[in-house]
Image: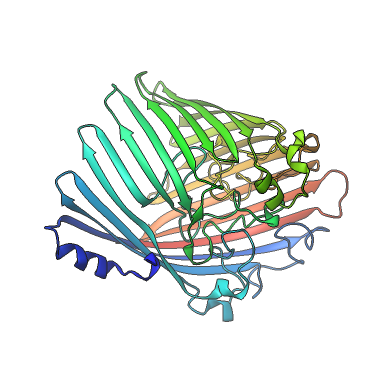
Length: 455
């Protein structure tokens, strides 16, 4: 069955003929996403995702736009049994012929290779389709769904969100504790785990979902995850997660966040990644046969991060620092390679999982946010990252940097609501400084505007 061809109306009609469906809730979102960038510097025409020097608003690949419409519904089928569905359509509405030259999402195949001109075609797929059953304090959810775990999660920064085909079990029998067990079989993200020679360099990062929302194996044979979230300590949340991604890696994530005196927030994160790359995975990632047994191809890595924030006179001020050791794999979202749960990567446009969570990288970040202007949320941040040579470890999966490079980034964000429409405007400046040479240095200034109507 091609789920992308099955309409919401047909599904609901099929259900009403067999069950007494109750508590039906319909929801949706229409979103317009536009971004334009200006490139300058000696390296503007070199490197991953590079462009020749461009100005804002050029009708070229430095200006991207797309429109999304999602319609979903949830319903109670039987006692304790519910179902959910969300269908998503994606289109340029002809914008590529007038003001843009590329699209922000679904522009790579699920193996990380470019989709070519097909990326400008209208696309649609079933983003979610699941059953959920609750017995006592235990809930089982099976099917296509969004996930929220530190190393595998749904991203909502782009025009469309990535999702997973998974079986998830949640239990709250223990006091102040949520236990999680999950198996992830497939996903429609692209950019990190795909078997393609592009995985060693870029691998489709920045696309969020695959062309046509196509679902493919998560890793090679899926992944298992287990987690525990505890709030027994007042004003404190403790998390512990373990992952096994077959033929890719074993990983763990530990995190503690606490709020003190109702105004100070502190947090600490520690994570580890132990590559267990199969011969087929290493070769598919672009390396010759024989490299699969090299220590630098299966080099373990760990990450440490801390943050502190304080609320003062209506302004939240924060600072964060992270350190990722050298190794084969980083700590970006395994589904996309783009964003990361590390404190230094949260809320950043460019200084995200591809840089802050990459092996052999130290990052620090400061920022502030306020709602002092009625109806408007303003935030700004500045971050710096130092990426090392990664001790000559090869990036068999994920595309880690392997040359000494400094990155800096400013992000300024304003969010408000105009009638029923949520508006977000972002300005960011991103600089790349390769220490060995200035021939690949590059400065990128970006303006991003997002309009969303939820119903």
